[in-house]
Image 1 (cartoon, rainbow, N blue to C red):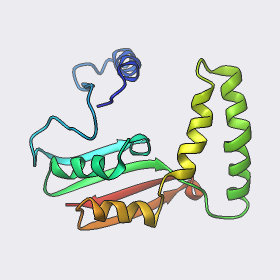
Image 2: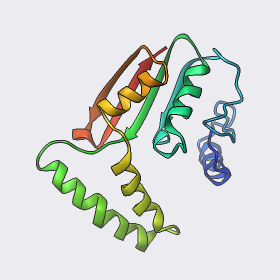
Image 3: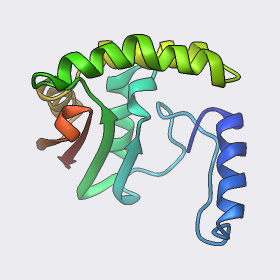
Length: 157
């Protein structure tokens, strides 16, 4: 599900190219107003999406609402690396080099600047785990990947 019809159009092309149109269905929708009944799913997932929620807590609460009791939320999101020298090198790459590449190669050069800015303000690690607890989840854990460039968050209803 995505609020952006253009993202869904691009996703549909990739699904068709892979021959998976009978398995994967993309839907247009708003994370803060999910059209599904409460307690409908065993798992809710997001990959690089919750960082873009207009209201993070409200979106997480909706993901909680549609989960069955005992269900799991899984979130993969960018985070800020934490160890020397990866933290410093990645910061330089992410802030200066990636936006430059984006301006040269992309149809939307602002997207790469937005990416950096959105990652900087996103509440990662313990702060995001706390958001999961605020949304109603009983447990919240996280697993940094690649030195903290990305993190998997898991919560239990």
